[in-house]
Length: 343
Length: 234
Image 1 (cartoon, chains in turn blue, green):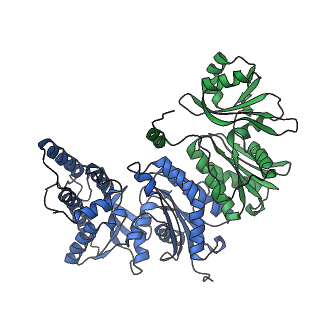
Image 2 (cartoon, helix red, strand yellow; image 1 turned 180 degrees about the vertical axis):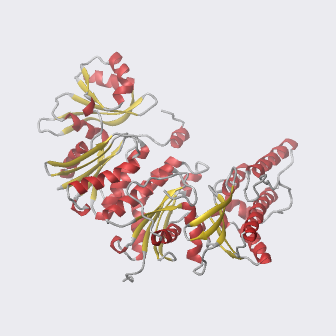
Image 3 (tube, chains in turn green, purple; image 1 turned 180 degrees about the horizontal axis):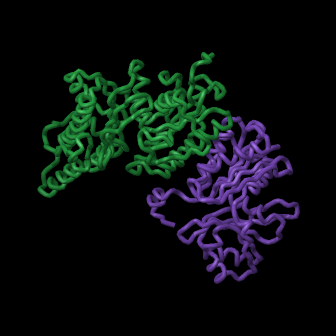
């Protein structure tokens, strides 16, 4: 039996290549967190194929939701509200989760709460760290996103910096492909880099003029590709471990320096990492070191909550729900939804 | 028995509730808004107008394809969500066979056609028998304008075309067809959930229902990435 005042959210996430559902109590307590990953299928194509991802979502979504309810030991009748990621992401993939969530909420007469995917990533920290409360600085880094965010309050965000071109995770994937490591690039580079010298090759720390908090990773990526080409032309064998360690070092330094600057400039004593690249060990270590030096408390989710999952959507949805957010049956997927934007 | 039927395979969004032999409600919208914005509000409206609760439905029928990949999935996910929440089974209704029901009563060969791009159509061939059941002469398929014309010529029977495929393939049909043919009137040309429900009713009677988790869109065409991998571009 659940306490009547408990808020139980059934959350659904299908913005990319993971079909996920979770049941979350009061925003912080995960009763279940089911993820069906399609990574093996997309690896064959060297990256996520949107149409294939959408086709897998429609096949997997009902069993994933059923498993989330079963593992939480609840039924739909026990659920307070249904939450779903409605952007940003792949439109065809998002639409499966959105249509399914709306239909379940409608048929069970439950409130519907649409959630921003990145707000979900940031909120993964609420699950891991029960004491974490806004305001804090957040660095969101994944295959699709690189954002520096001032989290002013629950559901209140200001984007302070963003990437001007590739997302950090995208740069990892492209470099991994160029050196023959394959997809997904992040974990593979992280592993190989441990055997290399991060200072072996000097790659540019691309700055964006007049925008001290913005990122640009295409320059670093191009420098890696140029380095590979010139080695090939000269017939020099490439030390792959040194190369990816140096590349990773350049990316990590850009991320750490700007995140620390944000916390200092805004006088925030807390910094949270979020998104798939937050699982990168070099980033975690460098950020830990820099934060310790500056007296900033660093928060990051465990590995399983860094990558796409529905528990984080349930955490974000809880604060939306208690703030009064309710979406209508005409809720649509918004592939380029902006952080902090409400539709 | 009450059937909720959902049709969103092409531009038309359509929802119907059929109870035994009565079409209680049918709501069809042919407008630029996406199915994601229209379909569930339409279902909500139909239930309000007929003073029904979601639990009063016995089975959820979805027009599963072929058609727009995204449109098929919005219909399928909407139907799956309702069936999941109410614990009902579903019916995978072939879109083109359901369209044949728009021409109920004709003794001609019925050829529903949907534009599949690249000079191809999604098409099937159907006929109503003496007991009023639709018979599949040719199951729904992906076929070029020319090959469909040849197939119909070989059958040597008069045919009536329905569907948005007429608009793109008309010139080829006129040039190639050697049998008597006609094109259906505009009001019979769009997909209708009422027709989906009628075919679903016959399928339920034959025991052709599936659990909600098993329902799949019938795309009739692999994704572009899969086609390129196989070296096929049709």
